[in-house]
Image (cartoon, rainbow, N blue to C red; front, side, top):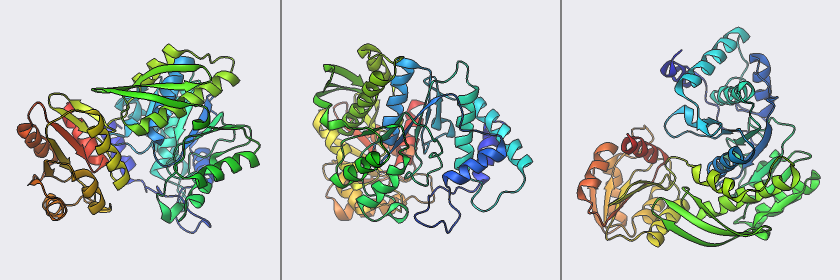
Length: 445
């Protein structure tokens, strides 16, 4: 199969992308079923690499990406698994600091398709798109030359029932901030959600807990660590960000830790990335104190942080005027994105390109995104779940007093924003991860 054929095959596979809460009573993914899938298709969790597992709600992808990048510099090579992807399936897997090629992806998909066909029929819930992707990652790590030393994985969702929760031995279990999300599957309260996520903790691993917005989450995770006999580090107790400056498409910051105060730079923009960066530094500091082969090296760590990037996360795509795309798609994340732009960029007018999926709280996102906009260009991503551009434009007009234009396609909306913007203006593209991905692809090409 070529890449297109491999993607077509993947899209035909059931996408059982939600875990079960409580008793398994429907076709969902679980670690046990993931292990069975590996057994039947010739896969294995034994890759020869050390494992770092990352869960939480906000910042999993960014933290996973930065940590893998830093480890690649300090004690590489490393491998990275994140989900979901924005544009291409290849975004989910990186080896030795580089995303895999379409050719490599197609080769692995072909191998797995043949293995699946040889295995015969699967029972309910035993075959999923996510199983295939995890299996591809594990095989690539195992077969990589030179041998991968560190595999850093982000959970798909939750923890207890997540298919990535298949490793009995881990070096680190890392927790980014826990918020309320996916309540139908993880629980209605912060305590319930944190309890599900805390199940990635295994005996013998160290636990890193990022600054938590809810003390209930910290209490649950730290208690689970104690029950499992694991040492834990609460990042804000030992690592503090002391200052931050933004320089166009980079931000630099000082962190005070056991080593003293050091300055770092990253392309991952936003106040939340300071929490993620401190979590990464805490993880590396712990590894440098427990693993002889890892030596704390400020310059190499800084290179790793600055090389890390994720498309569509507060990404600067143009200057004069500034064009910034961010995949914020909740009220809270949209407020953070707008506040960051206002705090750190000087501009005359704010031109907002907005698209929202119809399963999101559109009124809250509009209020957060458009309150300070001088012009809103309402558009729609090419997805069945998108709010049509004309309906979105009408919603904006009802809630916000500003100029509104309706442009049906994303490409035309970006062209219109660039046509209207002066050099001293700023174009912010937000409201949907899919919108951010589409714009990144358009403007980078």
